[in-house]
Image (cartoon, rainbow, N blue to C red):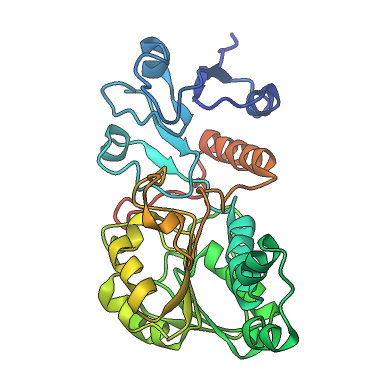
Length: 343
């Protein structure tokens, strides 16, 4: 007598196209896909039928973060984000289900955004745009004195958070001839934990420990923040840290808004050592229309787009289907979030 394999209900709560859903179904005939897209920034109550949520063994999610009462069969949830700060304190975080992240999907575009800021500052892009807006061609003496680029080959980039994104930033910076010093939590995360698109080693990068943050800030012409938001990193760049930064330095935040004290940041722009700040993330998003960072002459604001990956769909399909195979085989999943570390 042939036994019919038990179905594996997979709940997908994002508005993915049929190509993604078909790839999920193709992993194994036992998989039954339930597709119920929920809003990312609205009320998610009731969007997914209660019986579907209760029976789901696997879930791909962003805004819907149920605990064991709502999703008693849930064994694994794949987040549509690299960070997990929005999950802390939710039923999903407090429950028993394994959580995995999108780590490894966005290092390239986010690192390119950081290097874009470095190049834009070094080559006086903001200043030339102002001249262009006024249709003004400055004389040679003005161009020489005001538009001379900074020498990146004698500049230091400090990277706070040396994971996959930080390593890609370091690779690009070293290609420009910059000196790179990076800060990594010590001890480093378990190198044996399987990760999607693990970072390759970058030569000639000096790696510091967290207690050496002041040293990194003092030495760096550019400081890139690529840390996750955890209780340890909340507000880690405040008035004290900003005060020790190099005169004329630039702060580039591609991590999370809560990592930086924005009031202290504005003070450092007006009366401190900072020449410029570029931020893609903010304590409150969307950034309020009356926030001073919008029109500060030394500020560059982008609307949380630095991690947008042109090959996002292909990458998340590869990651999720590989993790589905691992889940069905009982193998270790890629990108398991460490609840103790907070990322």
